[in-house]
Length: 245
Image (cartoon, rainbow, N blue to C red; front, side, top):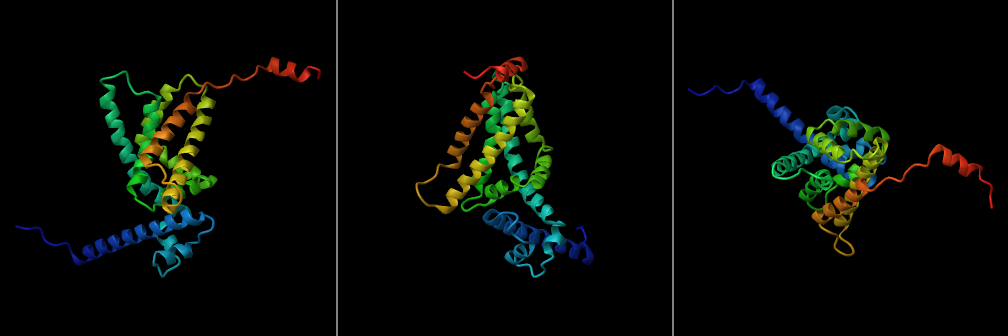
């Protein structure tokens, strides 16, 4: 005996939900492209609605609540795909750790970088997410919202904890400062690589894999560099009081 078909009202609800999800996807794709091309402040909700074929200029508010909600939805959708790649890398590292002394700084840095570049590579040319992310990271409010949401994802948390254990010889304030530098370097290097690939002018750019290697090299050196010792208060005072020659 077969199950009976869902009632008409249930089928109608399912079709409505599917249409709404499709509309959201189209709007997010249009918004990401426009934001990447022109910046967040220069793009209006009306432009996004027009670019995504929505006759109702209030569609952004209806589907996402606000511009901030739209930006967060775009970042969340991409972040989920990136974290899937990161989780697979971590699983591979767990297997390798059982047969070795354990991951080193470079391994953890690669786990920060390569999921991002692998995902961007999978998007093809042109893609927009790296340049969109760069604009988001220059907005203090949106950066805080997106960063707070990203930091609760377990694969990223595991990566940061592992990296932190390898860098526990550095003062906490130095680790924090270099972490901010690392985030900026990853974000803006990927944005520049994406732009170069999209424009297709000049010498062929490096592959995403080569970009990941270069970023991993640079960030490993940045994180492991010995910090310059701070001058003691006594020596600073002596310098201020010493007479000029």
